Amino acid sequence: MYAEHYKLSGRPFQLSPDHRFYFSSRSHSKAMAYLSYGLSEREGFIVITGDVGAGKTTLVGHLMAEIDSERYVSANVVTTQLEADDALRMVASGFGLAFEGRDKAALLREIERFLINNHELGKHVVLVVDEAQNMSMSAIEELRMLSNFQADQKPLLQCFLLGQPQFRVIMARPEMEQLRQRVIASCHIEPLEEDETRAYIEHRLRLVGWQGDPNFTDAAFQLIHLHAGGVPRRINTLCGRLLLFGSLEDLHEFDAAAVQEVVEELSDEGTQISSVEQPRVSRAVGLPSAPLPSMPVVALPSGPWRGAESYGEALDILENRVVALKRGTTR
Image (tube, rainbow, N blue to C red; front, side):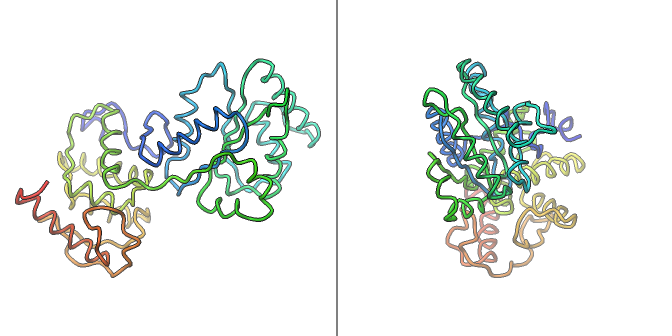
């Protein structure tokens, strides 16, 4: 609906991962460098962690779309609470191998034969394991054992482990020592900074033919960042609903009040955009109508409110900035 209203060629803020919308933030660029380094080393494990919706799957999807399919064979699997044998079936299924009715020994022979065949063809096999924090210790150990398969003194399988922040805690356990010794690179994806949030939104819009309609005010970008905390999926949720709201209301400019109204709608529906309860914003003047509860400054994202000692003070700073914008005294 909103795509037609704003003359866009598609939906820029869809929630399902799409590597075509990959955005190279500072943190994502660093993670991409680690992944590229890992591929060049052709061995070991690479661990990429990040909050839910940080863009880990999109990051790896972008990398896999860029590599030479003549030189690499890859499989992407999403894990649940798997035990050892199930992990092997998951790997076999990911590479299109027969696994039903096979015992562990047969599965290992099938996987090893597949790896050797690809090695003889000059192809490097990469396994991407998403949601790695869900794997049991026995399943993780099976992946480590698979990395022991070699030919011509070269490893036949390389693993990328993508997980939420708690996976770093799992990796720090004493029983994970042998796996840690196989990790050649590890990186954590941080949320977007305020300037990156704006660039991210504009980047996705431009990919679907955006020509400035709708326009986002500076205050709108700042409030989106404050509510979404720089997490790409939260930004997508908020901006997708904002465009829908704008098409229904025939809006061609989004200000702080429009953003706040959409946040309140999502909150009423039970969709969590921000962990902070935000104040009501008057559509008449676009300003907060009440201060927020006091919270530590360490929870605040970066932005013009840097230095505030509470969310209430942060919104006061934002309010003053909105007033200045209306008067044309700042950018």
